Image (cartoon, rainbow, N blue to C red; front, side):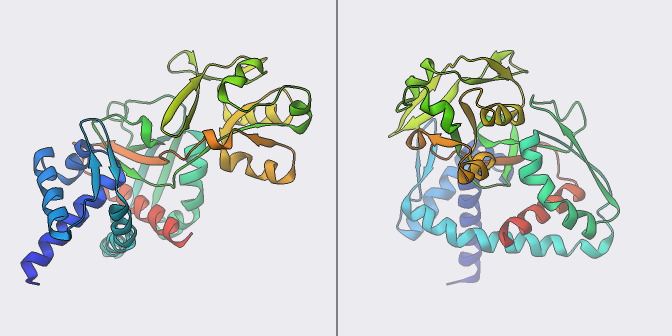
Length: 304
């Protein structure tokens, strides 16, 4: 293989990894600084070279083929290693200082920021991380945030989004006592006959409809019950108190399921969905402090 040909194929594979990570051609093209049509040509060239289709794509969605997943599994550790090596070149230059301003939900903070704060602050003692906790999306350009951390499926199209957490899964839970006194919950529609703990989306001013999916069929259920809140922690406490049925992230309720305080239902209706992403405007160059923070997040994720 000629050096030029090898470099070209590596660039093509990096482009494929970017699409697989972001799940969207437009975002990937913006992150790579190229047009969507050129990116499509790049992927077709790579697929022809490898002799395998890597992506299923249409005008609305992108999904990874089995061959694509195999290639991505081999590529991700190498790309993370390269990114870490490049960032390590700057570590001795005292470039990482100042304040990194982030907007995040409390769940995003707990999942992404909190686990790396000791490592980040030890490595970069001149840097400060400022986190503003909120559920509503903020205008990170107008309000001078460096980045935000939210679920990948909710991000705007004009943002560069970098995945910083594994896929997540929701869980429908209630106490054993509650389930003994109410009809079985065998289908999401059964929830309309139960006392459920509602979640209010403050920014939208509306109640969140619980989302389900099975065998490619998506379903939303508007529930009713004695309590409405806008904090997952309150929903968890209410579920543990036996107030009603809760709808929470699986990892948040896992210890209580293991202890027997909560029982999970509708497991086959709650498949994984895209986890937390760090996002920033496509037209803004990443600051050294943000690049360093992201490197620590990825390094910690790889070790874990």
